[in-house]
Length: 384
Length: 82
Image (tube, rainbow over all chains, first blue to last red; front, side, top):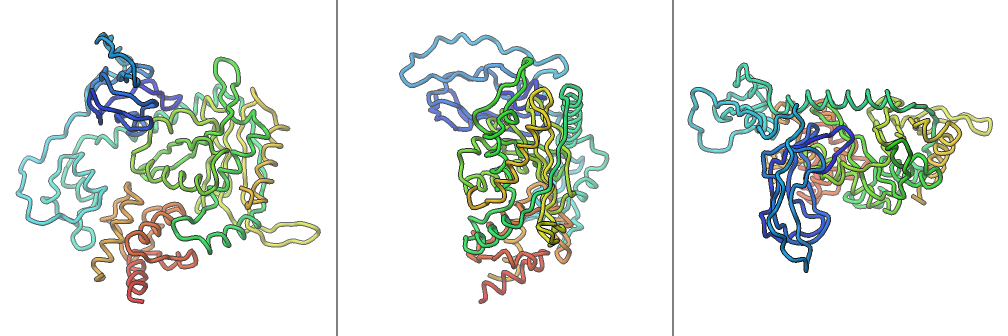
């Protein structure tokens, strides 16, 4: 069972996508794990044959438990001797999938043709065991809404997504409290002139096809990753009483979910990837985070986090570091600001950048150099 | 494509971009961003989805013309007719 974050201690296998005897290749998704945050796809990290499934679907087991055995090419088949997987911690009451909500007492026949309803309403109906065809829709052209489904279900018990929401919020609280308790945070802030970046981006996007357009977020993420080369003590993890720097910048991206809460999966090796590749990864990550199809490798090892409030957010953000990381960079809304330079004041697009960093590893001077490195990279967007 | 087909297409692509939003409750005449919290990444994924489904290339300067479902339908209908 992979660790999908410092706040995870167990997970439930909900689905195996391969059977014993199947050939698997590095990167293949073989199983789905339900955590308190989301359903996460588990990949394999080597080629071979899936010899044995040790933990069947439905079992909840602690992080570190062997889930399956893979026989590498050329390796002899091992005798079947898998130890029984340990039970999950006592609080987690192994196995037990969420109780099914009984269907409505008087099911009505589904009329021919597809019922008009959004994917969210369909999911909610499935969760509550409501027959969509029996629900009177109040949306446009009689479409069934989430509220219609919930009304039809009556006093339903909390759904799986509601339970997960409550648990996610609890987990965020625990992790952030741990961060504030253990990490001596310090904060720095600067304002960056994004005039050159905005002009370059407008020119680039004018000539690019829609599928290759860039957003400022990709440049911000790339600038942070490159700046860690100059100030490496911002990039890594603090574990066992010591800081372990990372040679690669695996940048966690804080993504807010419409259903509430946020999740911070990583884009790996951002320092070695071109801007287009980072943009593509970012687009893909945001869609999959909201669809609930993130992968285990994306959740397990970010080395620094970027929180970007985007164009509709607040002017600045003072983030809480995700343990065991040691720094978080926050970007506020890009907005036009009066900018004084050379004795003249002009209106420029600007962004507030904040650094939340760990005093056990760095101090304000190094943090300032880090912010300066980010600003310098963003002033030369063509080099990103 | 008929207007109804374009509307269905717009809603399908929106559903792919924002799987966690309740699209059946959308007011088609009202601002999309205000109703389902569309950000710039969603907007880009939305125009890419529309492009892949229709071949229509929507320039950034036209994004404000896609503010509501009705506006999207009108924009695509005009683009496809032209």
